[in-house]
Amino acid sequence: MVTFNPEEGLKALGLMSGTSLDGLDLCLAHFTLKNRTWSYKIECADAVAYPEELKKALATAQSMTALEYARLHSDYGIYLGEQVKAFMERFRVKPQLVASHGHTIFHQPSVRLTSQIGSGAGIAAESGIPAVCDFRTTDVALHGQGAPLVPVGDRYLFGDFDYCLNLGGFSNISSEGEGGTRKAYDITAVNYVLNHYTRQTGDDYDKDGNRARRGNVNPTVLDALNRLPFYEQTGPKSLGREWVEGQVLPLIDSFGMTTDDILATYCEHIALQTSYHVRPGSKVLVTGGGAFNRYLMERMAAVAEKVNFHIPDDLTVNFKEALIFAFLGVLYVSDIPSCLSSVTGSLHDNIGGAMYK
Image (cartoon, rainbow, N blue to C red; front, side):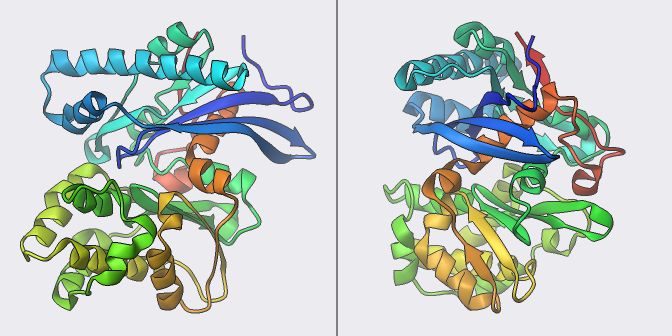
């Protein structure tokens, strides 16, 4: 049985697979709780690129038959377990717990539906380590958005910052609101869109934003993007691939721009949308792959007035989401809510996850 002893702490391995399909992030960290303050130390972390066959399966899972989908759920869980086992052998470590985000295929909270594949039973069976997964479904069942989940980690692990901004497949931001409630929500799509277009021309991503820097911003497209209805919504809100594929990509594609111009225009869109959610003079922790896009960070700094965008060490930048999912696993075994109703809009705070051992 896995339990959390505040003095001894707990070593948890977080697994994160983002919507941008870059691959699997694994982060082993030691968490402790002293004087009601959480702390962590990343012991080792790694990123594993997906095999092309698996990448293709994950990208097309929405259109699979029920049997194909169930098979992928099982196969992907076993794959995750194999990667955990290989990670343990590579770094000669043994976590007490694995916490897996899985890979989001469907996310439709308006009809109380979300699905992250990657069987927890497969992870536990293949790795021999107890596994917690399925972190979003309880919150969605409670009429919440089931996302974002990272803000609870922001509150407990990165409370020195006014905002925590993650630039991954999608961008999300969190901060403390009035009355000590944590507020968080998705802002827009980031690498999900940028990488979609670079892959069409043979690049996995736009290194340092060099291609965007060469491009020209199309003001008409920029204005159309900024007018998308999602940006008018208030309260807890989250994004999924359905929004990108149904609204963003068709809009961009209808203008027939070059790839470089698309990248330049979309980076400007990200910078503008971000600026609406940070106050002047604030300190913002920036993590996720987008933090390495120099052009994007320059545009964000130029558009957002007197905002200090702080990029931490590379391990935290690259593996913050995997780190926090490891932390969500610790919260699960500690019976501490990981889904905050002030963030997701659910009926009440709840403990997300299910354990397989």
